[in-house]
Length: 211
Image (tube, rainbow, N blue to C red):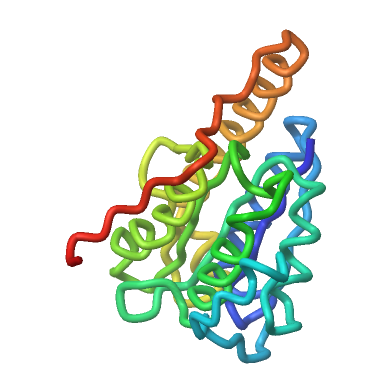
């Protein structure tokens, strides 16, 4: 069992990374492997609605989006982390997630469907809950079970040292990691017991309200 932890912050070893590191440590204690994927400082283009991915089966831009989608096939769960920018996730991560999840829609086997996922955010003070709401909608759209913790998945601090002082936030990260490990073990047990995944209807219904 492996979990891919996405550091959406441009800062490699900042507050978001600190929270993800706590998750990685706890997952290891639970017998689950993990890897932190750094989005980095390079600009990430937003989706241009060209729809070429519907035919190419990958995004038309050759950057980290296609690299990540290919990598995701080998992982069983995902946790996306972001700093809070103006009460939302940072712009690079939003563009990244837009393109990752849209270009993957028609892939079979699907790299994300039915794989547990969660979002975490870091903030100096506020804007955390709206950022979490924004990120969780990607998982809902992709039929990914959302892993919970004992509170909203957030840490507070302006520096990594301050995040380490957020004892409640660190406990939330540890609880999230244990819940992720538990869900993955349940999924593995279900597969061994031949529990089938939910049936998918062949034709997706899309209702347009203005005709």
